Length: 357
Image (cartoon, rainbow, N blue to C red; front, side, top):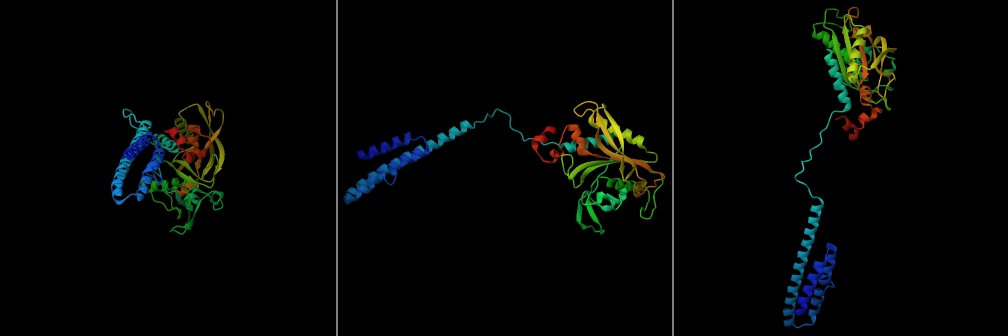
């Protein structure tokens, strides 16, 4: 029995000295493995008599159970020590304030659009919205774009490859200008006017002025540092009985100084050509201070609404006249926030977008 007690004591000592689970398993093998000391004692029982086997076997089982208990205790002790070590390494200071989920913010283009809507709203302009999939008539024909105009080709415009219920092909709108026609026609009907553009019947009665902007997404086959296949545009329209370029200059100057929050800029109208306006002009601005000081920057196309476009609105061009302009919201946002590459707006990089929250 003394030999069994010494084996149990040796096993307990070996288990206690183990500092890792691997060391503990190696110590276990010395006593309970295939060649362990307890196993060897069990093999030696073959030479004993029946009575000796009973006595010796019972004693060896008691010793084996004692060793297994000691092994289990040491395994638990090692596990507890590892857990304590992990808890200490990952200790939390419960007195610190909790971590709140980060709050999102508006996209810089959305911020710019909201600012544009607020500025023109303060000048009495309505904000109109319309379909992003348009018919050829609203996208081009109603705006005095002839059938052979290059904007109708696949080079500039995305077309839907199936016809609509009316039998015509549709496109993703290349500008928000179709809303000029849609809004004006709805405005005429709203105030009791009747017209039939196809039959040449136009409205020439008294009617409140049309004053509206149409911001929204537009689509063209174009992509580089300053162009994107999807971009944002704001169209402006003011139609009445006596609206001139003077009003256009006054309105746009008020808008641009409010948008950039500075009077230290100059406005320039540069002669140009657009099918839907006559005469037409590009609008350039030049800052008198800051990193863009002294450079003329194109920000908009504009002009007096073409008489044919007035007719397509359902109005008599002999009585009604007005101006229109179209500005890139993305371009204005780039200038306001100092962004050099348009593609940054659409890549979804949180590091970039978080600067505007």
